[in-house]
Image (cartoon, rainbow, N blue to C red):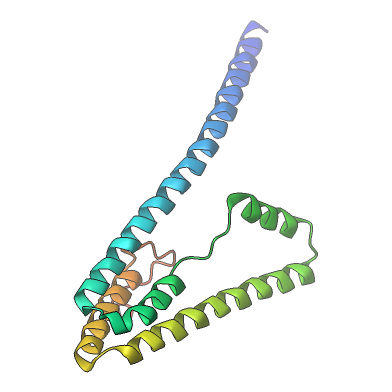
Length: 164
């Protein structure tokens, strides 16, 4: 009987330690999320600076450059709003979740269209030499994204034929 109590006591200690570890991990996840976002923003700012310098943006092109740079910023959504959105999904019926996901997809598509329009406007303002540079740099960035070097969640391969 003493060994059963001992095992149960150890089990309770293990559960308590695991729970406290989860709470600590949750706090660390929030901090690491903030840190990841900060590092991502720093990398993005660095790449945008490099692109602007490489393109040698002129004063006349500055307006389209700023519009492009603004359009490339990730959408702002604080953690509380994200959490509330996730919690709201838990209480929805399947058709409601489908509609909510469709609305989210439409919002992402609208953001993509904004980025596309800003990119095309910037591209149209560039000289042929700048366009060639932009083409080469954007292809390089695209290839890096597909190889997973920049956080591609889908693990797509860098090869255009996806390793075939």
